[in-house]
Amino acid sequence: MKIAELKPFYYRTFRIEELQNYFRQPVSSIRMQLHRFCKNGKLIRLKKNCYTFLDFHPNAFAIGQMMVDPSYYSLESILSAQGIIPEGVSVYTLITSKKTQQYTNQFGTYSYRHLPPSFIFGVEKRKDGVWMATAEKALLDYLYLNSKKFKPDFKVWQAERFDELETLDWKKMEEWGEQYGQKKLMHLVKNLHQYMKSQDYQAHR
Image (cartoon, rainbow, N blue to C red; front, side, top):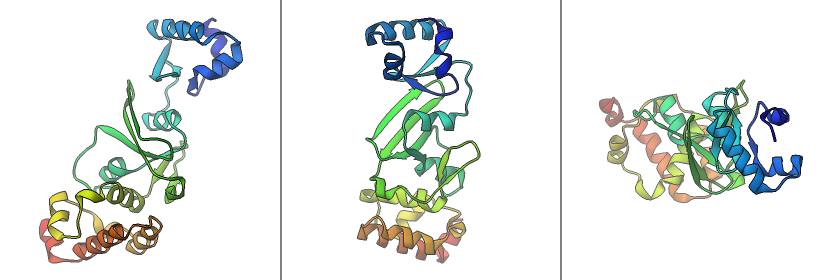
């Protein structure tokens, strides 16, 4: 197998299983050839059995979705970009209906958290094809997946240093929150909304 023979797999990620079906060669042989191409700088290994071309340059967000499909960006990646949490994030955070997993490659570190397929809503597609949670959905995902460490208490929200809460659609937060089927989440959402309207929040800002 020569690198030119991989032309049908250009402009996307591809997996060893696809090459095996295409070339009708043993997996062990294909793996050795891919290892050589990576060593020569012609391919990039994104994760186990998943590759792309070195001169194929989608943005890092697109790569994250190509590695695990379906998935969408949420949690800290969105909350930080929207100014809801103050910290910058060094890890790309996504939600997937597949298992929780994490990968690191030259594009960055990608952390995927599992939610059931019925929880995949409240996302928007960018022009580059990348799916992003709205700020409301990202915050709901964050509260739901970290609910064990939260309680409906203003001091908790102050410690988290939440900001820009007044930019959220709180009616949508409550409507979408109901779809998670967790009473504690709704208590957290309602208390966080009260906190947003309080003097404690204004003083914190």
